[in-house]
Length: 328
Ligand code: PCA
Image (tube, rainbow, N blue to C red; front, top):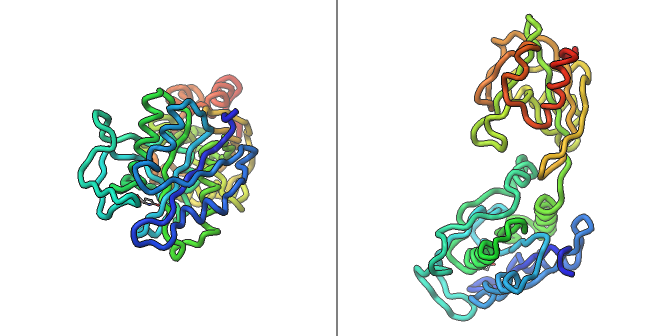
């Protein structure tokens, strides 16, 4: 059965490049596992034939846990996660079969752009503080973009939306070492196919009248328009209260040391599990806060708790407070 496999592909050298980092990374990845899921590697030729290989496998009915295409981006300094594939081939040099196209479609009568089916939000969270891994909206006009487009198009035509598929452009080994790139590719792979668990800390802040602070998530974020407590993810090496102090400084510009834990719960979202802790962070003057990330904030009495649309993870707790009272 093929259901368990993560497919990772790469390309050999092309044009005037004597090596291709994607092939070196693929060699290192070999037959590794990602959280118990077997990795299959495949080298694709840098030409039209190579660009069809994975799309053909999808059309033949093969099922994968995920697909990661790797390729060299000779002029980049960071590892780029490609958000979209364009239905356009515009080469500046011939491919390995001598094909040299200028403004041709990859597939005729097909959409202009196809977006990655990888979990963007999870990858955002994973690489938020990692300057070596960035998003890109331009996979180029050469065989990499063509391959990505053909694969996404085959998934689209087969109405398959649950195989996370991503193109990752790798900079030359002189920019980031092969070992480091292998490590990042494995992190990308686990973020794409394993359901992550996040430790999240949130602050219960009071004003003089005993009302509590709620903040509305900004429009560019996942769960935009939903309300939450200020706070965020606990980073590696941080204690929950350190993380919360940092988040409060970043999000609302106050420096506070959390007092004590008032709630802890576990909530399963579709794509991730959240282990939530809510800490009493004391009383502050509402004039002290500056909203650096949120769209809006409100100070709510117990009676007003349900006037905002709480995030799913917060809602069961808020509902209980409505009956039992807000803890302190
Ligand atoms: N990089 C090329 C094709 C093969 C590769 O590794 C590209 O960016 O299109």
